[in-house]
Length: 448
Image (cartoon, rainbow, N blue to C red; front, side, top):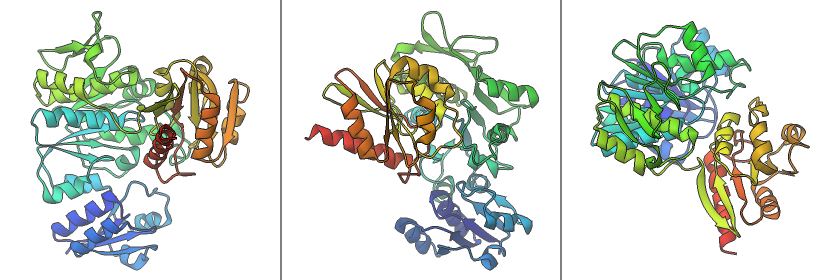
């Protein structure tokens, strides 16, 4: 009997453990931290042995194969020990892919992954496709493969998940953009991060498709260095040579994935902003390649309701609009948020810095931001960089302090934007926790 060890007791780890058990393997799950009650219950229900708060090396190193949760870095001591024993280490997506023949639409990029993944899923589901949602959103792919059957999966893939994928192959691979992110994971070497992202292409065949932003300088440079057999479907704001999605002179969105291109007025897209135009192009091209009817694509692109924590309108209090963009955990994501903001914006920045270069947003800050409120345990880097570059900058160390500062600064007609540029883990458990606390604080003001 094959012995499978799972490192990490979150959604992906527990899903992989359950799939392994269903396939008749001897499964053991180990988590150095704590496992939530609902995941413990799932493990117990399926008769899977587990431990938390430690890694018992003897049990782990007896594995034939290890499935590693994406949040565990390859430099973790237990992972190093496993590798030294020549035990294969794979991702949950790699493991689950062995047990399904469903078509895979896999979406990666530094920004826009979740919106594009959910939009693609929305188009397919509303058109009647038997589709599953997995990766960083939805239920674990392995968990679904264990008990469900879908004809297509739409999967959001981070660079962390791509690191331990070897034979898994998308039918449609989407790369939205590449900007500096998670550099602390990649020895502060941008090329290491780029290489991880481009693993999405490693097994593509001439029958597969690669959708990407044509004007992204990093993607463009990398494509000049590597070869792929996949069919190419680049998108851009305006038509260039080979562009498969663009805006024409009549301000219509053109999706040219086949011999019969489709079009719809850009004004009919439910998502606003340049970044969301690109997300809509990528999702629309993916749907076209899966032969979804044009009228279904148009309808879904026009009625999609957006993603929580991504440019999410919260409320207007005393004439001030509050926008929750907590999902902006890197500088480029904040750039896209600011690009869609009016002048006189009060910007909340801060959190766990991942090697950020704030020069990317400096011009937009100068043009649109009246004040910056720093919100983190240590705001020194932000205060040093933006001090003197905005009319007012505040140093706060909790969400309550930050919101109070915004109330003091903002006046009728202003916008308060939470778009932190940073990870949330200094003050919050996740970007979702940060966003929900922000929304609660704003809504509480309505009741005062």
